Length: 103
Ligand code: TYC
Image (cartoon, rainbow, N blue to C red; front, side, top):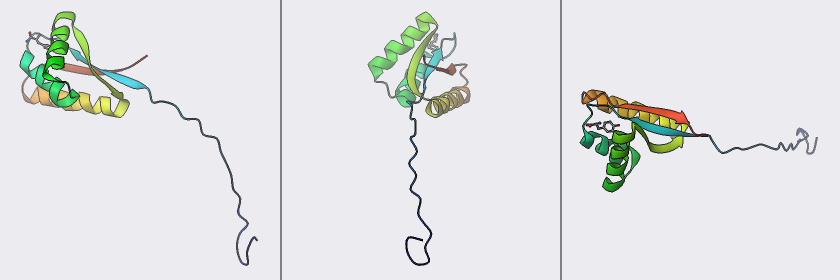
């Protein structure tokens, strides 16, 4: 023992590999029924876009079929998908939101 009645102490050092977490894109999909104003509201409220950014993204989705609302770690991306989908359904809109891994 190192001291009376004590246990010998072992100090161990382990090297730990750290990695950047994989990022996930949250995509908005176009449809024929969800109002443009609802999509703009979603982009502002859930994805912290300005009115101008939200309008541009919404119109890009409207014309191209889909677009990136935001990029997050997996948990945050999945939470955004669940929250926005629930909100849209509650309002009776068919808006589809999905998360996909980046890279
Ligand atoms: N196409 C819809 C309309 O004309 C608007 C819209 C935009 C819907 C983006 C969904 O992700 C979407 N009302």
